[in-house]
Amino acid sequence: MSVTSPLLQASDACVLEGLRAIVGEKACIEVASDMQPFTTDYRKLYHGKALAVVLPADTQQVSAVLALCFEHNIPVVPQGGNTSLMGGAVPDGAGNAVVLNLRRMNQVQEIDLLNDTMTLQAGVTLQAARAAAEDAGRLFPLRIGSEGSCQIGGNLSTNAGGTAVLRYGNMRDLTLGIEAVLPDGRIYSSLRGLRKDNTGYDLKQLFIGSEGTLGIITAAVLKLMPLPTASAVAWVAVDNPHAAVELLTEAKRVAGQAVTAFELISGPALTLVLESMPQLSAPLPAAHDWMVLIELTSGGDAESLDAMLMGILEQGMERGLVTDAAVAASLADARAFWMLREEISDAQTRAGGSIKCDISIPLSKIADFIAVASAQVLALAPDARMVIYGHMGDGNVHFNPLRPKDVTPALFLAENYARVSHAVDGLATRQNGSISAEHGIGVAKRDDLLDCKSSVELELMWQVKRALDPKHLLNPGKVLPGLPGTA
Image (cartoon, rainbow, N blue to C red; front, side, top):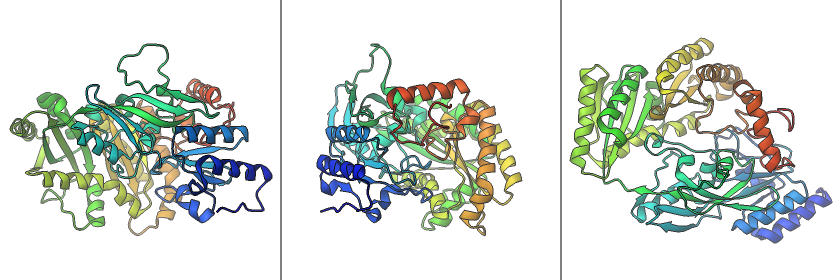
């Protein structure tokens, strides 16, 4: 049984009593130490406080919680798996907000094999969603490193991308309908699974990518794809990112839509993973400054796909684009290659002191961007380890300068985060790129929008925010820079 602190104001005590009545005492966490996992971010960089953490079991409970908080002017911070890299899923330090975590809403409600759709609650982990689709003989193609802990609601709120966007698109492309609860408790639903619906504004797109600032997504209808029957994977050394772009063009010419992933990996990124996880091995005998991980998939036979991959590599060798390559001879080899790629993010987290720049650039400009940005960063922080990797196939590069081994994370970030981030993001903006391809804005990039968004864009964003959240209660302080009405 919970005990309300005597220091709480009467209104707060009333809200806590109401929250307990809605979700049950066991699903209403009020002790500070018990709330800590929900008020600290994945990288342990953002720490906040909360009035309470609630874990609703269904959409009606979410609606009731939001209606109660709206009535009492209580901020609400939506949260899924809390894997945000931008501080977007934790409260600030005021201690007056309610964190609403959706992990209890974890049911796959329907898989429609004729319509090739899956309807599920927002608290389903990405891993569970992919497994449910595979069990039904289908593919849900979103694939990111944190799939075991991130949730579908969070994927939707940040418009997640991952390693297969080149072929399948991001969450906007994979979503047919959503259910969301508005700040005042009203429920919006477009859970119809329609691929064509021209009856006015496509309202679901307002909520996708809004990071919980307009409404809380509680369910979705997602597209399913045919389950591939064959795959071919290669780890390829290239001289530079320019060669990687040309190799991608060749891969698309030879294999078309079978090109599912094309991941760029810098030498320091691979070195970091191997140092962090010595049980892993480099696929190639020599060290290389730049590598790409290529994956082809299809519903055909493995022999045809293998021939396509070998054709790509042979053409790459003849044109001087490829300097060495290792082709996965088994599923175990392919998984080992992918583990090296997917562990880059966690290896940075373990090392500490990573400057996260999540850049999207037109593919025609991405190689020049990497060269110029690298030179600028090394001029500012000469000993930084240039951990550069990401989804080159769709123009997304994670440009993450990392602290030298002999410098503490705190010191490196204090001296370099602002100026390095500003330089990299500024260059991306000048090249008609984006400072957030898939990680969202959260707190970390919020004020940077003042430099990369026009006054018209910012005012339109604020107008949408004021229309749907007039009291500014949903995930306050995230995404939108400035105070309400001052954009």
